[in-house]
Length: 244
Image (cartoon, rainbow, N blue to C red; front, side, top):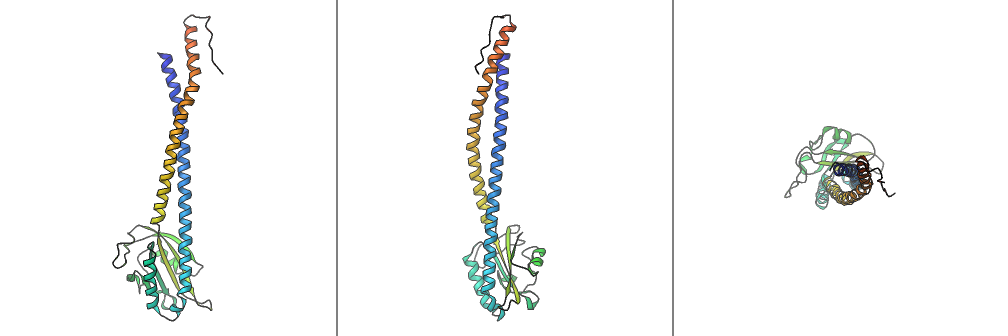
């Protein structure tokens, strides 16, 4: 009985140690996979919104220079309708102390400091510099007319900023575009689910391997313990046979 219990204890310990190693490896693989996918999707989103801001800053230069702000507003509305992941677009005029002359959603129009994102984000956006992006969060519900809300408070967003310059390279305004990270989060969640599925399969295979390994390693120990028990009982002629 003691020999059997010791045998089970050894097998259990080997299986437990092997299972813990497998769980640690699978967890590390899942974490690295998820982190890699998150970084890839975020980089793609940054490049996407930055290219949009740069393209629109070039496309709307003449309208801003001619103060044809109504045309910019019309173009903005069409732009947001065609791009559901875009939460807002703002164009400010430098000669008007960075007043927002065109905005979608329209409630941010004519403001100087829109309260949809933290103040520090707006302050950084109005500083001179090359096109850039920043990851921030929404402070209020963003909704277009006749549409469900596009974003709720606390939702993560990537904002791209690009200066609007004339043909003479004079800065006349700034464009800001905010794109939701919801699709990025969904893509990352999908990647994590796939990683977990692979991890579960790997864990199952690993546990089966751990059981076989524990059996192979513990059986010689069990034979040795049985032989030791016989010798201790007085059978001095007994020889233990432990296959290598």
